[in-house]
Amino acid sequence: MTRVAAIDCGTNSIRLLVADVPPTGAATDLVRRMEVVRLGQGVDATGRLATEAIERTRKVLAEYAATARELGAEDVRMVATSATRDAANRAEFEDMVLTTLGRLPDVVPGREEAELSFLGATASLEAAAAQHGTTPPEPPFLVVDIGGGSTEFVLGDAAGLRAARSVDIGCVRLTERRLHGDPPSVAEIAATEDDIRAALALVRAEVPVAEARSLVGLAGSVTTVAALALRLPAYDPLVIHGSRIPAADVRAVTADLLAAPRAQRAALPVMHPGRVDVIGAGALILRVIVDEFGMDEVVVSEHDILDGIALRLAR
Image (cartoon, rainbow, N blue to C red; front, side):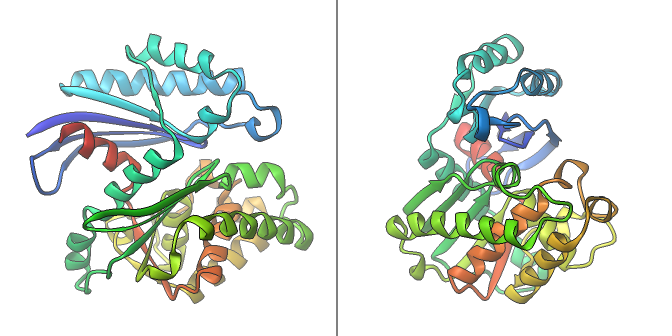
């Protein structure tokens, strides 16, 4: 058994997992945390990480580093993704991480980000299905990780990856670029859909999506849509993980979110405060993916790149 700490620093949130990982089988979580720091604030427009965004991230990272030390993690890895790859002042961010965590972040390319997401998302699908009393989803899996700045698409099965592509559509990026109204206008939504479809054309050129038997969706936009579709009175990751949300429910939830003003979205019991402003774009990305790729449902995973980082670090 190896105790490791994994940190995933994305465009919208920074997350920590401290887990005991055996040589084979499922890991045991000790701590799993998520804080919205909006590191990617303004990156799509300015090309730079905002000073206040770096500071918000530093404060949370210091807490995570202390937690990892207190729990006796044997190794720690921090992965930084879309916002950091895009930033002209990436070195400033890396210096902050080195000072705070004691090591540099791994600013991974989109391909590795996709591999880690696939590993984390698919490792526990059979166990989740058993818990729900359903049949496991069938491979090949198309794993879709909707982030703040980018979305990763990975096609694979137990033998590994067949193809992957990362594209620059994410809930923060598209909100800042297109969805300015409260609620957004029909024209704003249509322009966002056009951006998503253009990105999906790039995915189709490299990933044979028609081979997929199951669509597996992960990250906060997908899990929030699932919680709303399931009409949960409070956010419950055990119920959400492994749930199967029909395409019609994805469409209905997305339509409701895009039609709701901010105050109404914020009042939803399953809504994380940090997702209120960007959930419309995240849900819209999922809905267009389901429709464009002709999927009947989305299998929802609470496990993602964070779990993939931990598994690969320990094994």
